[in-house]
Length: 168
Image (cartoon, rainbow, N blue to C red; front, top):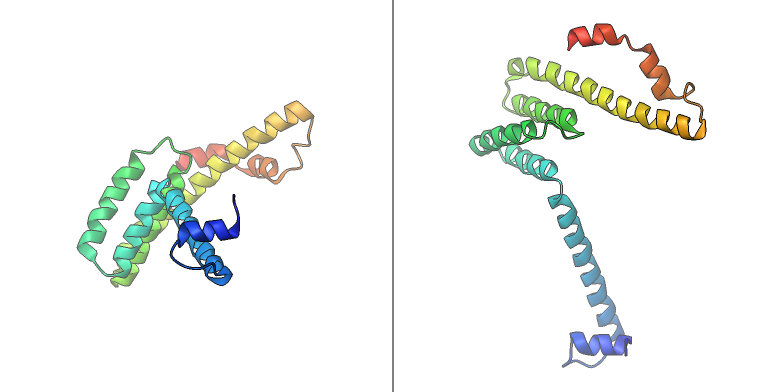
């Protein structure tokens, strides 16, 4: 029988029923379950886990370990070139390098990183734009939806792709 009393008895067989204690234990278990689900979700995102770890090393000023894991992160990102967030991940990599150079007072070292981060953000934008345009075209073809009055369509229409490709 699934009652509060039976649950309490299963959890704390030696104690007499106490509703307040049961509620506290259930609340604690719920919080632990939420934390467990967060941990499981985070582990499914290896880039985010690595970035969080590297950021923590930078905060703790463990330069040697930070730089070692930063190189490993770069190799990991480069192995994921076909991943949809490749350029975003590269931009985040450049961003953490910029932050690192600022923390060690090497502002002169970050110029290239600022340019690279900017380039990667633009490239990720173009990837996202093309994905959204593809979805909008499918939607237009299937449901005759208005394609030309979308921000994505108007943005793509205004881009000089020939000049853009020359920069890339």
